[in-house]
Image (cartoon, rainbow, N blue to C red; front, side, top):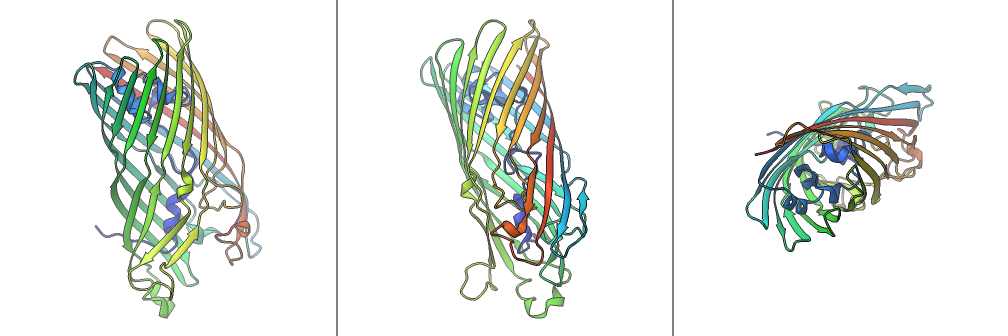
Length: 421
């Protein structure tokens, strides 16, 4: 498979679409957990889809079970007062993010009273963003499409009546298709297409104080990806001496972050349950974006290009409640606060990221003893994000400096079914 990689466009992999959690993480891996804004996701274990957050919870599920779900992600990100360094007239950008479907599925089998095994398919990272072909910031990126798919074989073991542990082996595929309209003065329409498969690990533990109360912890490791490709531009011949620089094999690292979470679940009475969640995402591992060439690196430098990113670790807090309406229907509610991976001093049009608040609701319908359904809706409202590239370490002082104010929001629609064989 031919892979194309640019000097600068790879950074667009990391554009923070507001369709996601902070950075480009997709938290939406369970319609049931989404109904509570993912409060208690690490301890809930209400069905096997919760194994994404804590694999140890599989020991709570008997026999053989299957879960299949999908989330429709409908983001909106607009920019107002867009102004270029050359004094361009203020303009507005209507929407740079596109809707997408994120599927998920889990299958589990109870081997005996102690051991449960399973396998899950998730889409934990991804985004689609698109600006007009010749917008004022086109050298910062035009089209960006990143998808991932993770297959995780896993196992959970009940050490005691109260304590369960579990582990998984996430096998993660990442594919990126990106483009810039400009790179250097005369080089235009540069594009990237590349993919890679790498492996990490997942750990979890759950402690059940009694029938009504439990706590869980989960950890997903960083996964180190290395995209390989070549620089290619249809106009590269126009730059004379740079033709060698623009025609060589190159590579770049893309690391998906480690995540640690802890959650609690408490069944207050026959009707009400309460839950809470805290998650730490270690985005600080993404310190810089380094492009390595085979033959044409700058004299005395190991990289063709090195861009400081300065991402920070983020915190996610959520509280929620569930209400058992009758023997078939359960209602879920939740609210969450999600911290951005960048601050104003590092925010660029590639990363119009800002803090956000989640408002979620959901329903569970128990059709019969074996079959049930989960529905969820979430509205995410982000704070306005001011971008001024003259302030940033990465792009300040260039001829392409520009400023704008981004307004971002997301609607999430989740659906899943659960079946006990």
